[in-house]
Length: 189
Image (cartoon, rainbow, N blue to C red; front, side, top):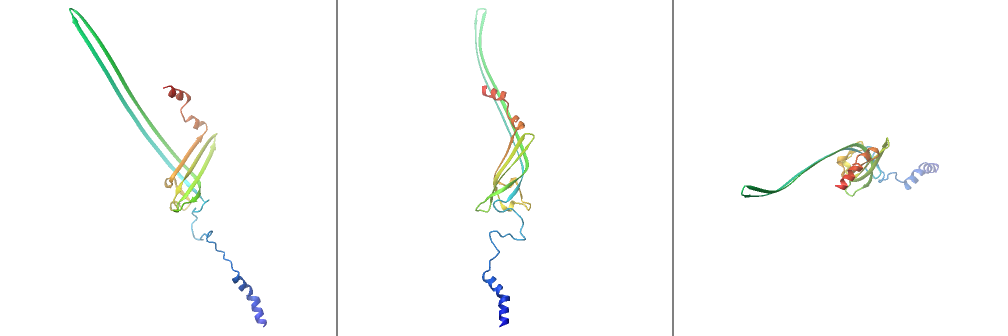
């Protein structure tokens, strides 16, 4: 009898634990101990490596030339009378536009949502200010999980539907456009 009571006291908590056992495994928050640390959930951060360059060239030339000549000549006795009309119109025009841009930066963005096909919609911005110059870079688009490198970076050229805005505000940004005299001249002519 003493042995049975002793066994119940000794093994009782074990049987109670089995009967009331709660698992510590939660499938929604499970992360493998051997998996990599890739960003894959909403709210995770990914660094975008921006290496973008663009250039465009456009040339236009046009020429137009019109000419009208009319002449009249009469002779009577030794007097010679001449009459002439001439009209000439020349037009020449030309223009060239050369544009180029280059942007190299790193911007961290956040995964905003996971799309049904497994792609991720990302958005983020970075604002810099120095010497009274504000510069902001905004990025949004879609990325594939397999394009994310081991250090959670991705090239900007791997973003689908990419929208990259680079905005500058300050003395340099204000001096980048045409001046007031150019605006007045363009308005008048």
